[in-house]
Every structure is written in C-alpha cells, then in structure tokens.
Image 1 (tube, one colour):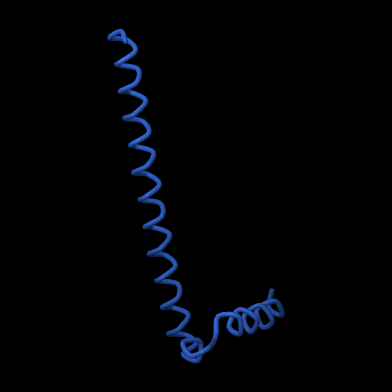
Image 2: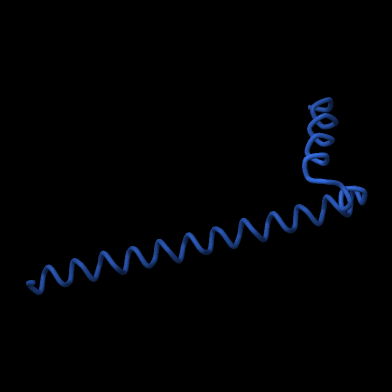
Length: 68
C-alpha cells in the first residue's frame, strides 16, 4: 500500500468517524426534544401520564384534527 493510499484510507476513516459522531449528536438531540415535549404534554394535560399510548394518540388525533 502506497503512502497516498494510506492517507486516503485515513481520511476516509476520519470522515466516517465524524459522520458517526454527528449521528450520535442528532439522535441525542432528538431524544432530548421528545422527552421535553412529553413533559410539556403531561404538564398541560396531566391525564396523559396515566393513558396507554394508543389511547393518548387516538384522543389527540381526534381532538386536534377538529382545530386544524
């Protein structure tokens, strides 16, 4: 393997590592946002905390579509 090939392979690996870090950051940001949105929902609609997810989804879709 020539020096140029080694450098090219190293650059490729650095790029792949950077992309993997970006994916982790994006996933963590999405998780944080979803947790915050869930907390807001429970604060504004406390009954939501005790509802099954399917029931909550059905309720929200049914009631929010009327207001769109």
